[in-house]
Figure 1: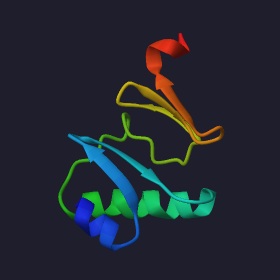
Figure 2: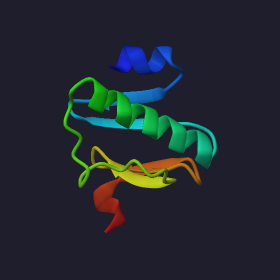
Figure 3: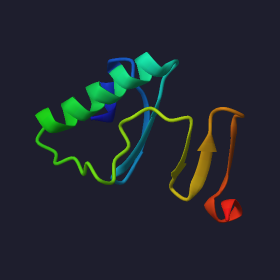
Amino acid sequence: MVKYWRENGVNIVLYLDDGLGMDEGYKNCKDTSEFVKSSLKLAGFIVNEEKSIFEPVQCLEWLGLIWDSKDFTFKGARAQN
């Protein structure tokens, strides 16, 4: 799937069953997110809607790190508390 997405211009990284994708601007991010989500479903994967974040955000926790694209930083999630 990653190869397919990257061949289609998606900037994405996966670790086990977690992925992180990036793009410029809200609309591009939303379109990319919908493309990834629909291709997962078309490939027969069951998407965990409760766990997944398909709405573009600028800050999120992924793999124990807080990724913040507003100020281009990341830090350990424990540092947030």
